[in-house]
Length: 210
Image (cartoon, rainbow, N blue to C red; front, top):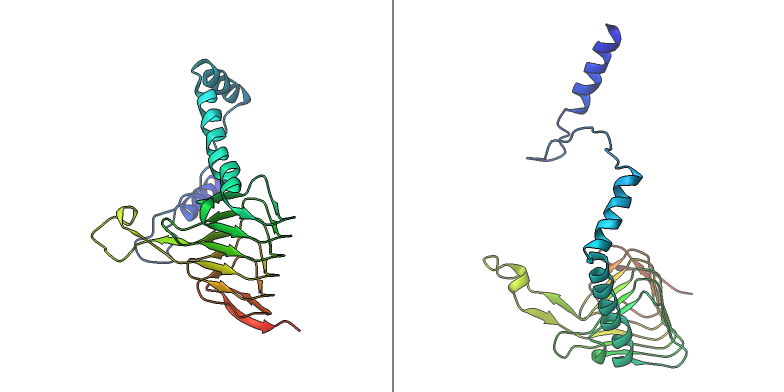
């Protein structure tokens, strides 16, 4: 009887609304309903029978060719620069990368939608999951879905010998000075001075490199 009472108390505890703000959706504790291996095996068989798996592979192959292979071909890339196999360059005709750089896993470098360019100097290195965009979505008109608004764009300039830490985002119109270090996870929305260690959201200069 006592164990039933305790179980009821625990259930009520986890069904309480966790309120850290207004109108927050109520959370409940649940058990993970995991599918069996046979379920996944049957799904694999179905995907082969229906040819769904071949369509998916064909789509992914085309996506990779457009966003990696053709992007690298269109971009101007200097001698000795390494672009990881999982990095994407979109609108490569508006991307210029200097020599002896290293662009890591899952980087995305996107030139502008019309004429804005991404211009990167020599000896620039990036961590994984870095994003560099020479454009952004319009957000000014609240009565129009943002996906239907015009873009705005501006050149991104990253000078020589810059290190951009993992998961950082470089936004349109930014100029990063020579020898600058951008800390991991930063969102760069303004110009950063040369030979400076910077970081944060939004990114700010923290100290000069000695």
